[in-house]
Image (cartoon, rainbow, N blue to C red; front, side, top):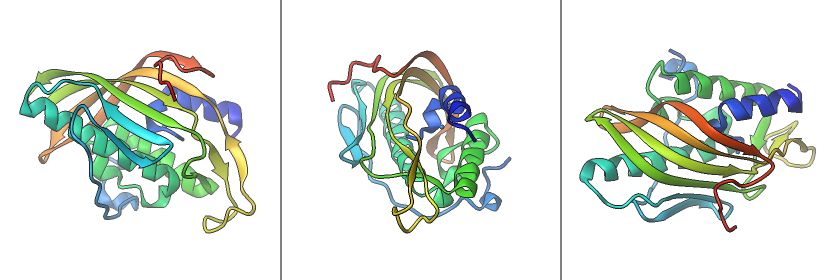
Length: 207
């Protein structure tokens, strides 16, 4: 896949980050992981370069639950960039949903192409700005995202000796995520980009 093609994919599904029926355990993209997430008005990180934060005021247990699960899922997504073979798609997305299919396909492409991100190679900033409750099982999460995470092409996953930069695009976007309550967890269903900028930060992150 060329860099130009990759950039188009990133713009279309930025939320799947390089740092974006197949989502069942049969996909092979399953592993056990424990992730600790913060609640609203706090910041969570998986690495110094990766920050997922919420500025949503504490309004209700329902909103808090949605924000907390969204942060947990996004932290899982950053780990998927580094270890695509172990990405727990079914833990993050609603089975058969657009994001489940897209994320599954993205991880399969990464595995086939030996493509992965590295800790602290580029920056990821995610800010949850508001939550819109549709009903007790559906909601929209509004975010602003800045992503300069570098995607590497590596001949071997256990060594960086032969790594080359595959994509170092800088993208920022405002996005609306449709999330759905599934067996007690708010999972990603689909997403829409409402505004985007290539090569700059439209979100106003200071670092």
